[in-house]
Length: 191
Image (cartoon, rainbow, N blue to C red; front, side, top):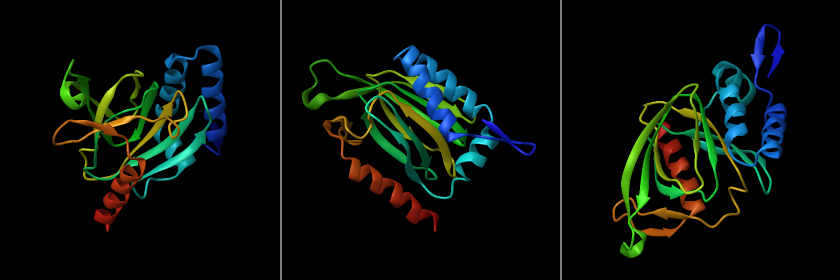
C-alpha cells in the first residue's frame, strides 16, 4: 500500500510483487495468505486502488504460469456451482460476504459424485486459503455486490478442471465460458 494524501491506497504492482516474493520463498499458499490478509485488512484502501465494485465480473489483474490474481465481484445472491481449481488459492474479501460449501468426492460413486462436507462464511477482512484439492460452491448471500481478491498458485485459466452439476452432483469438464455468462446474467438482474 502507499499513501495518497492522508488515505492509504492498495498498490496492485506492489501486491503482485509481494505475492511473487512469497511464492519464491515458499511455493505453498502460506506466504501469499499473509500478503492477502494484509491487503484486505484495509478494505477502503483496496476499493481506492481497484475501484468501487459496480458490476459482477472476473477481472484479471495478473496471470503467469505460477500465479494468477483476480478481482472477483459476485453479483447479488449469485451462486457458482461446485468446482475445483487443482491448485491452491487464497481468497480475501474486501467488501461483502462469500459463503462456501465444501464438498468431498464419494469413493466409487458413479459419475464422480460428491457430498457436502462443510461450509465457511467469509466476510470483509477475511483471508482464507483453499487447498489444491478443494471442491467448493460459492454464494454471495447479500443483496449487493461482494468484492474479493482471489490469488491462485498457477495459471487459473490454463488448467483443465471440473465442475459438478448442481442438481445431479455429477462431475463434468469445467466450462469457463458458461461461468463467465453467470456473471453477465447477474449484471442483467442489477438493472
